[in-house]
Length: 401
Image (tube, rainbow, N blue to C red; front, side):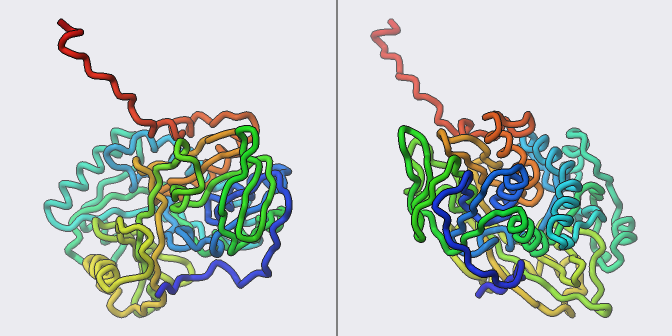
């Protein structure tokens, strides 16, 4: 059973309009961020969501804005986009909080990445070397320096990295704020509305067929997260290499007696994010098992044991919620932001960086709609990078003789 923190009180259902300038497929973080951005720019926007707002990955996330801690070998192409989006987050936060009247629990204490034992220290040294080469701000800490920042950690913590610019938000608060901001900007949110087909005319997408009827649109934006790559919606030549990576997480209730953390803390097994409402979020497993629902004893054990390994105080914390979700993951773990066909734009595949990349993604999609181009920081993330390499016919022995 999934028992996750709710983004907002139930809302009155909205009817599907007959027409909208823009229809966004997917009511998660990316879809709502795009919808709100476009609506503020004067467009009429409708969001259609197959289940309920945030049901896929957005409410299952931890809310990390952590380009330094996330940086790993092979992720250099993603770094400019990550840093561009992080730089936009303060403005995005301020505008969202002003539009919604809600606080999103944006926390700037930074992130600690921990190591226990020689092998983990060596791997952490390699990560730090990569961060330094990439120009990221990350400070090496001894075990005693780590515990000076987080006294509740076990003495076994051997070393750590402090990433001061890696921040976090509370996903439940962000999603509640986005729903309110979208509605305030005139966005129509239609839930329980699976998309059955795209409508095409003259080689152009002109709208959608849904479980609630048809809607015509000048532009359809596919932001359906892990469902974006499902067969049947797109023609084969436009198929998206996106699959679900399941993650299980839990929320612990902290008290004055149990104590909590001051920073977001990462280990090789788990990450832990303290929220201002007293929850400590522990996440997340990584399971390549398709759309297999629910939480498992093995998954929860791995989370609790990984957290207990560095934070003994969790033994006294009440488990308040457990849940699972599906990260939308492309073949190279980076997003796909592109125009697939006239009238059809895609923004999906954000893997575990959806919250970090939301502001820049919304701006990039708005740029595509305005003039057909992507900003410099997003140009490497088109669908064409997944195009198969053309096969070269073998040269026969007779021809080469």
